[in-house]
Amino acid sequence: MRLFEPIEQLEENEDSLRKQVNALPEAQKKEFYKRQSEELKDPDTYAALNWFFLGGFHHCYLRKYALFSFELILLTISIIGLVLEYTNSLFIIAFLVLFELPQLFFSQKIARQYNYDVSCDIFNEVSRG
Image (cartoon, rainbow, N blue to C red; front, side):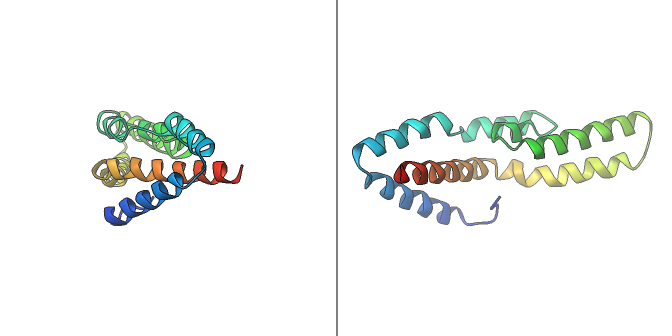
């Protein structure tokens, strides 16, 4: 995850990829856009999932299942710990909050970077094949 990469760099990368796609033969270009429309994720949906749901469900949207599992397990452990009145559970919750805040504030950028990475993979597959 490249949270602190300038957004201008991401925009330049997207423009460069767009130019490379436009240089493809028509059949490959059609295949690229078909696959891209099936695999891209909506940044607003990712942001909404990040904002409204606890436990890292937004990671599932971007197919980061290991990270989702890790966060859900930590959240479950901390909730059980709070119910059983373990004060260490507050540290786990604080860690989760500190880990999730940057993802919340940069959610649009994270989804765009995911889409760019997916588009690059599709371009590489289509241009080879």
